[in-house]
Amino acid sequence: MTGWVIMAATGLGTLLLRSSFTVFVGDRRMPATLTRALRFVPAAVMTALVTPAVFLVDGRLDLTFDNLRWPAAAVAAVVAWKTGNIAYTIAVGMVTLWIAQALL
Amino acid sequence: MIAIVPFGLIVGITAAKVGFGPVLGIGASAFVFAGASQLAAMALYADQAAIVVAVATALVINARFVMYSAALRAHFQHLSAPARTGLSHLMTDQAFALSIVDFPPQPPDEVRPHRHWFYFGVAFPLFVDWMATTAIGYVAGAAVPDSWGLEFAVVLVFLALIFPAVTDRPSVMAAFAAGVTAVATHSLPYRLGLPLAAVVGITAGVISERRQS
Image (cartoon, rainbow over all chains, first blue to last red; front, side, top):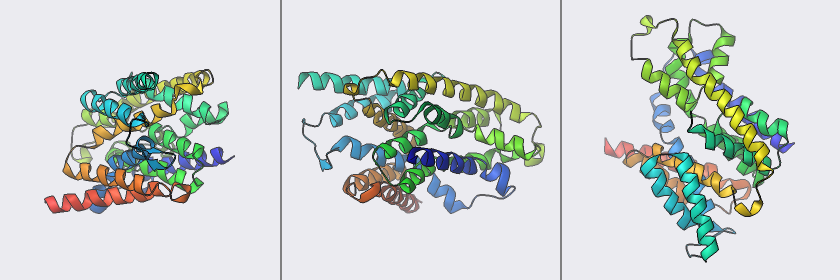
């Protein structure tokens, strides 16, 4: 049930965002402050989703090699940066994690 | 086109892994049709975050559509409201980027009446592609053993999405501040640390930009 509520609200809210100007606001410009803030949303939100998943183990910071997610993510980050390709990033990150788990 | 295939597969697999039924798991792709937000909402659902936090995070990720909506408005203004709503729902990063490249800047009164067909021609195949890959991912998801640790693939998708967004010093500051805050505030209940980190990151970016100019 919770899943339905979350996805329905996300879908409805997203439709409102998408049609904000095309359907609702019409011929008005976006406030400059909003444009400036929106520019930083992807960088901020994506990084905030990644760092706890990579650096925390059971809620504690773990930068040792007991936590193999951070080295795998570091290798994947280089691939993401150099290629900009999601498929390569997933493939290299997962394979690095599996190899590291097998070796250590 | 090809680039969204792994993304759609991961969304489908994740929907199966978090326990969504087929109607919700695949239907959400049609109704939300925005991969990063779908992944974030599902990850937060699996983490038992508060509903408000899950929805707010997904909507913040999708806030960029407001910019696209403002840019596309002039090209849709001669259409009926249902047509504008339908075309708006098909809005994606790719459809926007590809059609804006082909929509050169021009005075609003020179808008050509058939531009929306070009946009539709880019946007609709992406929608079909998205539905197909999510459905395949959903069916495959049941067969993927938990030991593969595929929830890490979701993290890798987000990781891949950081780099195109980090283009200059202020955006690096935004990412860094948000990343550190998210780790530092992770123990807050209902994953409230996430929206907090987003706000801190965006503020850091705005301040850094203001200092630069």
